[in-house]
Length: 247
Image (tube, rainbow, N blue to C red; front, side, top):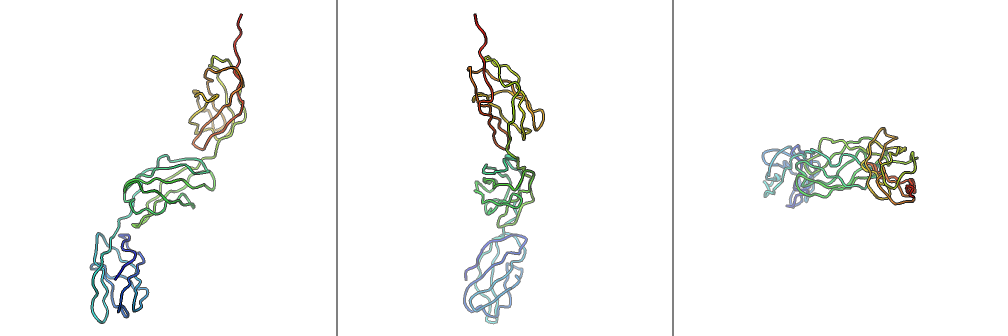
């Protein structure tokens, strides 16, 4: 007498199909000491809604002919999500997020607002998931669904990719040290600035402006790249290194 699925939430409500023989006219299906709701019944199958419960319980069917043999049903506790790392990323998605919590071993879906993704179960306390594309920038609820139920939501921020408009000044000494104002959009979450691939120190002033100190470089034009939690933007040949005079 197979039972499918053989596990469900401790809060009950799982739709379960039991197959076997001589099942017509079932009067009761018991999960341990509790009775399930029968929704359909044929001579070879019964569909029921599981009652609330916990642990592992015996399931058996009662008909006018008596009680069946028992099969095991496993109650799974609801999952708990504790944290996201990182808790924000590009609106385009495709970045990987780690979700920490409890009861994740049967996780099937992670929802980011109205979009969803299939996670990789690392352990019962950790999931890895590739973030789906967001509908727009802003915060969305993130929930994890397992056989045991769905977590309370955590917050994840979709962040638009930055843009770069201009640098002032757009040139400076090869010895470095030039303070450059970078103008653009989406700069508030800046995590890095490079001049020709060399890391520069920087400070964020507003979402449209930051100041970076040009590192030493070789004479000529170089790309300036700003990286934020929403992605990267490049100003090609945006800064020109100028050699100092010599006599």
